[in-house]
Image 1 (spheres, rainbow, N blue to C red):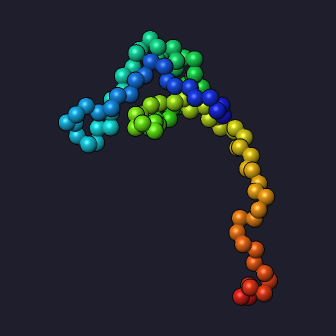
Image 2 (image 1 turned 135 degrees about the horizontal axis):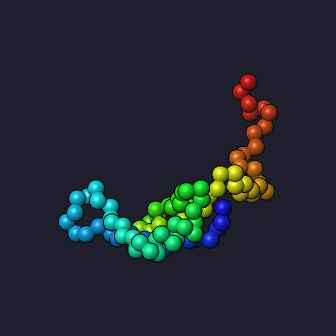
Image 3 (image 1 turned 45 degrees about the vertical axis):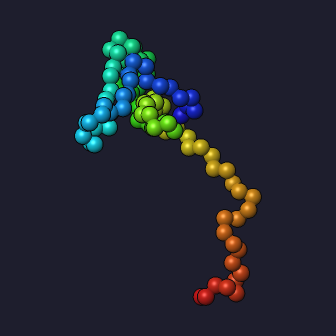
Length: 94
């Protein structure tokens, strides 16, 4: 999976208008020509996956999800110190 953020081109997410019901979280607009081109460029077996995220400022945005099944998981970094206190054999109740 790529670490690069790819924003969806031709799609705009807008905050809800005042006085709309609380279940309305926003609206999405598509600029058809741009969005179609984006979909064609990122087509993966007929699918384009995106994640809906919230910025630190509270605005919603969409980012291309580039995960491909079979991608190697990131390596875990081993710590130099043990995660918990060491337990002596005499401290074990059984």
